[in-house]
Image: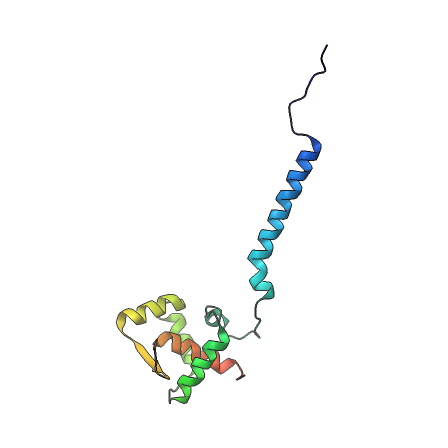
Length: 131
């Protein structure tokens, strides 16, 4: 008589596979959350719903300071209210696309920029200290 062979997965193979999948899950979570955990952190403001849409808040603040230095008058509260309740409903990408389509552009230090981007940058400059 020959010994009966069981069909199935061996204990070692199962444990190795389970640990491998766990490692992949941990690595994926680290990559997904890495930017939030290790990225730049800013003090909380009442404009974070708008400022969190900016890829680089420091650069945006520089643009905003340059726009204000060129004589633009910016009221952060009024701009934020108009931006939140306007046609773009708080979406920076929609507002930028609409500005480009409508030709609503502003010149800041020789750069031609969408007006909504300059406005949100001015909000960033109003809450971010100059470096």
